[in-house]
Structure formats: structure tokens, C-alpha cells
Length: 417
Image 1: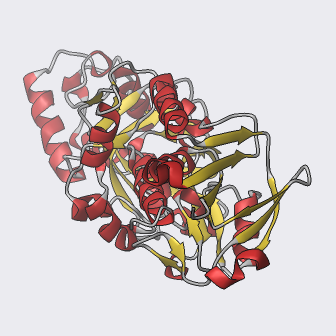
Image 2: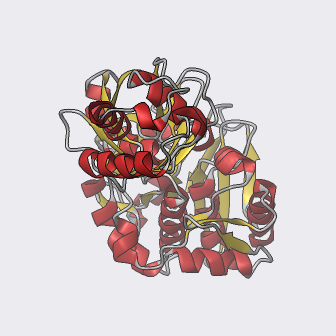
């Protein structure tokens, strides 16, 4: 009887679990799959994603369009996304009793609005497939296995407690944390690591126009970083620390390296009514004045802005909220239009988006075969998830990259890629 194929997965997050399940389901009785998680918590990011609801994926079912949501790794993911895309993810969870729903912005969540639904599904699938899961077990060292040298692959894995395990294939899925063991293992086998920096983060801003407005949001704002080509459009949320929301987080993702290079100090320009330019808004405000001469500025806002923010922008334009529209000059309208469409804020730092901590950086992509997620430098060594230099914008794209690369790696390690 042939010896069983032994596979070791390092990392108990989304990519690691999905790969372990895919591999174990294919191997069946022909192999054994062991998953090691250094912490006591499995699927930690799955639990907190989306405010505890878990943004599983995004309802973008065209691979070419989907690949455009990745500031780094989009080109490399194009082929893999033709093999495993959001529709496959939806079918996988549906087939295991978990229904997903699509929200207006395309994000997909379990209908339960509870991340525990996804966590429990993955845990059940892993158990059913026979995956051996061990928490609180880190990997100290990985070396080539001389016992399997004749087979062209194989690893000798030393765990933190001193236990040694021999395996045929290994997957590194330890995430993008620069202190993770995954990077050290990759480097030990000759891989280069692109330096990790935060990718999704909010902007720290101290400005009287925003003070005390935490929770106020604008549905359609245009944002850009002065001096760079970075531009985005989408909802913007005022927080206790400054600005967040998709319109900011997408900007932070595409500009991760540039913003890190300037130490997160830059000028942010915001158009709070993205459908208008300064001139078109001035014309709209002039018409509003003509139609509402007796109303006070502070009691009625003619554009899609929260009234509290509108009042702050009035003050910034040196207009008293109690002023009747009839008393507002054309010059004052021009100043107000500029304040709304060309507002400038000084960003003095960043705050991590705790619900979806993502990094830019990781194992260099040209050193990985994206048909199998196998190292081009070391046969039998595979990578999946954020340990790679891949990151997506907010909206479920990072989890989709984890499901896609994890599934491909799992198939390949089972010998069916």
C-alpha cells in the first residue's frame, strides 16, 4: 500500500482553512492534512470582518472586472479567478447550508448577519474532511526533508514545542503581519519579501469642520491626495479621528506605499457632492437662493449633505446659519461652492481599520506559480492569502483572494491541479 501524502498548513485563517478543506476532500483516505495555528484563535479575521457580519465576497462575477479591485496582484489573479471566482464561493457555502445575500454596494454577507455562521461552516467542513487542526502551535523551523529527497520534495517541520513532523507538501498561509513566521520560512527557502505596510486605514484629521460629527456620512464624495494621481469616489464617514468609509479606504489601498513614504502626512482634497464641480454647484446654489429667498441657510440644504455637515461648511465659508438666502451674495455662493467641492484637510496620521486589517506587501509574486500557488524556487512549498503581495480594496475582495488562492493551493497539494 502506497504511503499517505502528508500535507502541513501553517496558518489558521481564511486561506489556510479553505486550502486545508480543498486538499483533504480530494485526498480522502490517501492522505493526511494537518493545520497549525500559532494563536489560540482560529479564523480570527473572519470573526471580526464587516463588524462581526463577515463580508464573505463581492457580487462581481466577471473575472476581468474583479481583478481590477486589487491594487497589487490583480494581473496575477486574473487566471486563478477564472478557475475560482465569487460565484464558486457562493455555491460552495450554499452547498454547505449557508445562504449569502448581496447588499446595494455589492458586498455579500451571510443572511444571518453573523460571522459565526461562516466560521462554523468552515470548522464543520474541515472536521468532516478529516483535517487535523492544532491551535497554540507555532512553527519554529522548516528544512528540506532528506528522507524524501528522492521524491523531489518534502519538509522537516519543527514546532515551537520541539516536536518534529515530516511532510510531503506545505502551505504558508500566515497572513500579512510582518512578524509572522510565514515570511521567515519563505525567506529561508530563498524568497524575497516586499516590505509590508498597511493597506486599509482611516485618515487622522483634526479640523473644526469635522469635530463632533462622528457618525455623519456622505453617500457620494470624490477624494484625492494632493500631488499624487490617487483619486477615488464613494461614501465617506466622519469618525472620532477624522475620515473613513469606502471613499477613503479605497484611496488608502491604492496609495498604500506612497502614503507610507510620506509618513501619512499629506493634503486630502474632498468634493462632498461628487456630481458637481465648483461652477455647477455655484449655479445650483444660485437657483436655490432664487427659489427660497426667505429660508435661512442653516435650516435647509439644497444638496445631498447631512444638515450638521452643511452647517459646518457654511461657517467655514463665513456664512452664519441664521442668514436668509436672500442676503447671500454671488461671491459668498462661490466661496460656499468651493468649500463643498474643493475642501482641503491636513492628514496627520492613520488609524487601522480594525474590522478589515489588510497589508500591502509579502512574498514576491513572480516567484510563485499562480496555476498551483507553488513556489518557483522550492518544489512542494505553496502560498495562499495575504502572505503574498496581494491586497484588494474594501468590499469582500481580500477574502475572495483568500478563497481563490487557498482552493488552488489545496487542489495542487492533493495532486489534482
